Amino acid sequence: MKIGITCYPTYGGSGVVATELGKALAEKGHEVHFISYAFPHRLSHYVKNIYYHEVELSKYPLFEHQLYGLALTSKMLEVIEFENLDLLHVHYAIPHATSAYLAKQIIRTHNKDIKIITTLHGTDITLVGLEPSFLPLVKFSIEESDGVTAVSRFLKEQTLTNYNIHADIKVIHNFVDTSLYTINPSQKMRESYAPNGEKILIHTSNFRVVKRVTDTIRILDLVKKEIPAKLVLVGDGPDRSECERLARELDLSDDVKFLGKQDGLEEILNCADLFLMPSQSESFGLSALEAMACGLPVVSSSVGGLPELVRHNETGYIAEFGDISRMALYTIDLLKNEKKYKAFSRNARERAVNNFDINLIIPQYEKYYESVLGDLA
Image 1 (cartoon, rainbow, N blue to C red):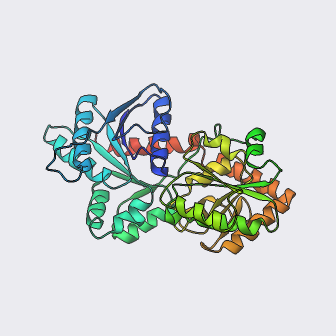
Image 2 (image 1 turned 45 degrees about the vertical axis):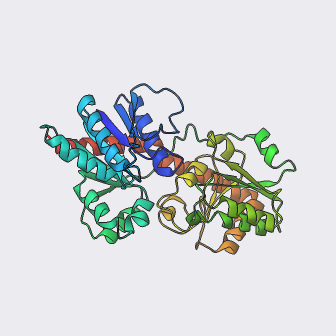
């Protein structure tokens, strides 16, 4: 099967999932063509059957803003025609699904056809797509896709409700490679963050306001009153400066480690004891899943798709978003009770392996591709 994949090639969850999906499909013998404005960061080494097509942006002075959506359509047309793609799988609705629709209409004038599958990841539906200037376009693009998937039941229901559509949306959860993200304690790295044997809390995200990264610092402040602890923050984004300011204000500068964007996340997770995810909005919680695969219990908010991932009082704890005191109490409870902690750690790992392993999810995508392509016959 020849598959074109378009995604944002950055550290965000949608780009990570799309890239890991493409790599897994290529390893199973499919031919995968990534179409984007930059090389996906998770493609860190050569993989057989993977090809990259860069979208070239016009710098013509008449255009005040770069026309990425139209440039993407042109590149899609080129790849569809000359690589004889079977389908386009676009991740994140704006502008990818719209560009794919335009490409499909144009390629039909060449007596060709292509199937389009759109995967919805979260803020493309719950935030950006709801803006009045985008809502009709997002609704149209979803309805005109040949197949639509969502990464959680929550996101499927939000899409159907917010856009008043009757599309047949297939839920295919996010996944993790549990052979890579596994329990493999990194004592040397652990000692570099907690030289005196402190417990280590960790959070990874793109530091947007909806991630409520400042809450992790306030949680640490409360936890430290009961247990010696450190907080490791991985990632970068618009809220990082505020987080650094808060750490200084609470006199926690020595206890909060800002690592910025990092690869090799599985090694960093293995130096920690517990993962914090206090988000205000979360369609699934991929970073929490990666932590669970490494045996980390998760203390999270109860928003979005997180309850589909985190089992309360089994793989971690769930609290109302913004309830910092409750999250701190849950954290202290786990870190003070070794027997309970070990049980939660084991449960977290087993849930990741038994429900969200890459070898369970990729066949779901393959089967869905085949069903959509079957309609072309």
